[in-house]
Length: 610
DNA sequence: AGCACGCCGACT
DNA sequence: GTCGGCGTGCTC
Image (cartoon, rainbow, N blue to C red; front, side, top):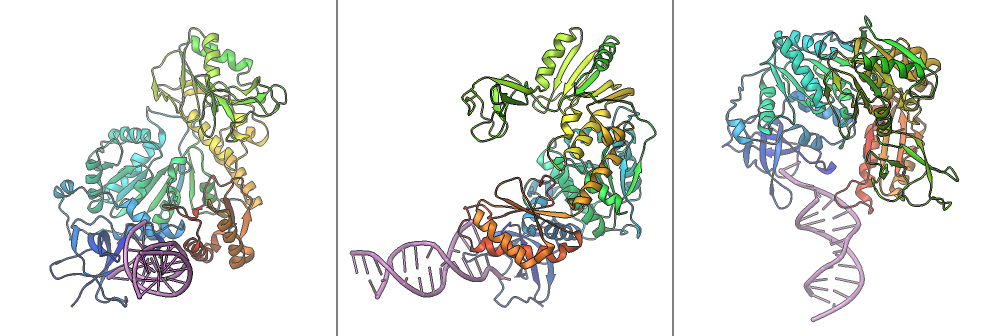
């Protein structure tokens, strides 16, 4: 009996995004799912590596079948569940299976493979519970130990599942979070079941961990791509800060951890837990429709003072800082932007000063003029009106540092930003000025956390300005001491009302309800298409409206060479295949395609779309 | 992506 | 006649 193998090629090309049938020669005794094989491919019969995604005794291919040349790896590098997930993700994000395969299957390391024996008898045990738990957990914002509360929750949950011989996948937004989780695991005495995927490891260590994840249950910890790990008998997925930028894959098909986790949860019927101090709009939606259960620990939180004035530091705040520093305790001030000036205006005509490329000019940490977009530095060209003098519109963190060094000569004034990030400082009379997301840890916590630019952060003209601001505030507030005080500058109305009790979920829920009224994401789905060819983009738009009619509603785009359109979640299964077909048809016919580039870049549910 | 096939114009 | 232009289509 002849055996036929179904082979997938790890290529992003849409034309190759299908199964190819190959004859399995007699000298290959056994061939299993997920093994890599070398096959002849294309008119020149060049050897390509493919992955086996099935075997059969017949083929529906009408031509003559070629034979597999060789088995490349006897150790399978892709599980059935992983492949099912890849298929679902490709369909959800309009990507190809091939590009996902090449992202998910690690580069082979033959020497590492030799130290692992694959057990063909290995099979996944019980298949999760019939009633899986799906939760959104907001940990207490007040810390009770030296590591963050989420890491304690994650470690305790993971322990419950691994003692039941079920795997756990943990997806974190940042490498620093891995260290925090390691501490929490160590406190529970968990060591040998933890497999960490990190750039701090050697490539061969990560590969060995992957082989481990292929055939034994464990706790698998990493950044966003850990969501695709094999993890047999998966019991639980833990995702921290699903709304963080780094939880989005920056290359095609631009998947994000949250949606992949949701797909995987439904495919493998495992439990799923999202956690953050402040929720993403998508998580709020999932709670609102009853898909996630909201669990929140509000047992303890710092005191809050809200100033309505637009002064960054009003008199009361200033004297509180002075008093705190005198008592040898640390104060944190969050400033929205880096540098000496965030924007410049002409003294004569008041126009915003812009670079040749059209973006705004600011003054950086070295007092140099710099473009926000093209990063060009140097002399400031005169304004259109001929005037050369400028005034600064808003000062940044560097200016704040300079001023506070003069004001508080006794204090240890520290500047931390993404450019020069300080992770941890020693307790003492520290006055820390940090840009959002770069706040250092201090043991015992800060006596004051001042969110000095709260007003301007939420005022940014972006759909997700509030969502991002809330998370950045919450992550700073978490670094306050148990008796610490939080000060917001310039908040009014409903937001001030929510923040006086640090009701992050409620603040986001209000934001979500507004979006719902306007029919904006995430209450509806959004697709973004960009292209260098505006004529093809226009063609796509016209044909889309023609093919899909009124259910498609194009949304105005701020970005050039980009179109957006919204549709309902329930319409996705009708719209996506049509859309995909259109994109591929126009792409293959267009003469405007640049070599090595796609004609259209398609992004589904891009959080930064509008 | 490559590469071959194929159907028209310019050329030794 | 036939060499080569790149539009079209396929890769088991």
